[in-house]
Image (cartoon, rainbow, N blue to C red):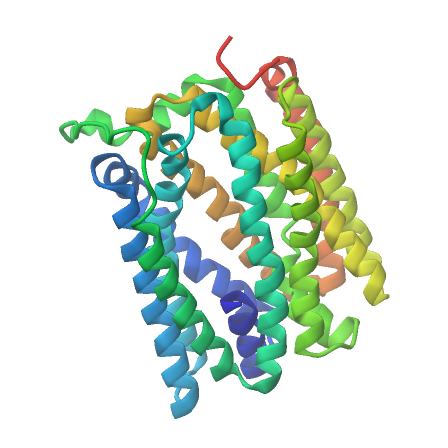
Length: 376
């Protein structure tokens, strides 16, 4: 809901694709700067409390959005500053959430648990943008108010999650330990290939940043249409996660991931060419369903091939890769749309995604050969 409100609000203020891209950059920079710090924090402190603090900060940001909208002083620079604050909070929140799951369920159940966790997240991503688009029709202050309440509710609930595994002991901070997450990933070509493939695929195929332009100028719908477009990938992703929860992926995860990314690129191309609202929804839903394969494979590989005492640091690097592909991908889409137009930017991104996947098959043959999530 917050993403829909920020995107529509910024485009209404500026009518600029470049300004939309800068919102993604504002969220990415804090994540990039804090990567080495957040991993150590997630490995040394109660991850539930870290998440609660981060969600409280996000609640405060939503509250400031609300006050700025009601007071009429919410300008583009203020939106960038608040987006950076939200990005900083999510920099700490993402690796803490990712590394919390192995302490809640048995390692043997992690692929299925990851799919179920992703499906819960996709439900939120379906309902959130749809509700955000409807509420924005009432007024942006309505969206920010509901976001404020929801973040506070999440912060209060997360601390009640029971853990089946005790927190690991706090290791001393050394220069080597700070960079140990990066070193661990570099030593494992399967994890490195999966993370880098997802990074570059979404970096080039990030069409979601341009959805306000598509909704307003190409498909000629209002905020409700933007909400539907933002929800469509989550609808497809929900179908995919429910499938993987029922039929967990246990063999040849690398091949499944590479195939899913190719479908992701093809769906991006269809969306870029479409001028019909319902075809665009179908393309975005397909895009979301194929992206689930990357999410499940990447998360399961990280969780099952990483020792728990390093999981926070490795998850922090993973979150940086995700943030780079999402937020920096939005910036890249905004820049290319400013140069060539929104449709050309999406088409180039889809073609680039398929090209990257074919290249990764040559650069990371262990990813093609890996037979299971566990170390062999």
